[in-house]
Length: 511
Image 1 (cartoon, rainbow, N blue to C red):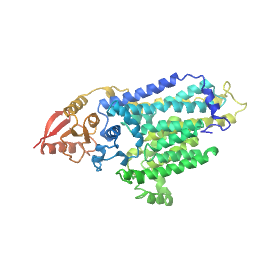
Image 2: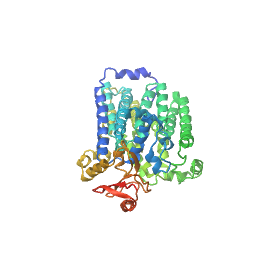
Image 3: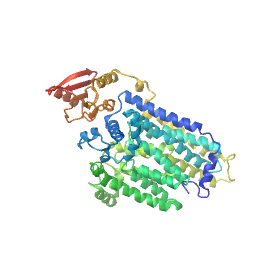
Image 4: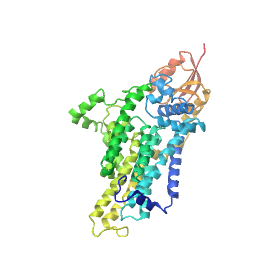
């Protein structure tokens, strides 16, 4: 028996209340979310807000898959010194990306990834809704239709949540699969479908090398349940082994380095040294969890939309290993900040944990209420508690302007400027199939029809260069260095083919 619901009821009993309910609003919510996410990403792409790191990396890799080859990302291999035939399986263990390759036979370009990401993130909504509906309708104090409305509040709150917003805003990443697969795993577990749970866990392990930590975390949750302890132990073991094999065996096998993303120099030079330090000097490890303080801010922001109900549920323990991976690090500040896509890896665990935490809170109040409450007469305190889903939705709405989705409603997000027009003109100068070094924000517009490299601090001597001397661009430390690079190239067999509003296209003169 599954999930966080009473063992006294069979899975069939939990499915029964869903009969007779209209699914049209749920379908509309899911489709509208996918359309909104797609619009956000495609407008950002059209306005040159996307980046070579990481959209071009994934675009080149999935295109290679679509040609039935290994997922080679030349832009990643050349910039990071692995060579132009570098497979991204040597960077991150993400073979699940191969599932996206057939869509490149329909449209070969990074826009395909942006739309697919939108669909994947939105597709988690029906599974979260079903989990929430069953949880809300399990007790006697909420009617079937009351539970339906409450589930919609939670589903909409997820759809506009800030971790989803930041994932949509930062190009495409493999994280797009994780909310959906996590929702499937937890909802299917709730329904008592163990084979579905196992399949979802297997697919999660194909998303990224550290997803073994998520599977192990789910195992820890299962261990808290009497009927699921054997399954939980299996998940913990498989998750730990998978994380080890992916980082120490598979990634090096595909040309990467096992220590490439080692971020724990504050504790030691490798896992063994860091683990020993954490065990013998636990205060050092604890202090890292709050250094810098933005780490605490991120955790608070993760829990706030659910009104901290997640801390009352054992489901939430599933997020702990991945959180520790990020918050114990002393490198890669992107890992612990609220922006970027990293928080989307655990957003579904937090939402499901919030629903289960609320259910537990309501059950505790109900057990202490006399006479026994029911849907028509829930009692004053339970009537207040029953408003939790509405408050969750209101909090999510209130937080929206402060994160990525808030920018969508500003005029500047949609407007074309002289800079974007100049970028489009600069891109048009570069011929098809050319080898080109491109500034970070213009590279995605070239990726589908050229062999695109990142314009970086190493001269590559490509026949074409699209430089930006109007705005600071990754990975240069300053605008002055970008300008100096253009001057250097002009002194060394390059000529200006186009120049407007800071964008300079250089072509190499053949001798």
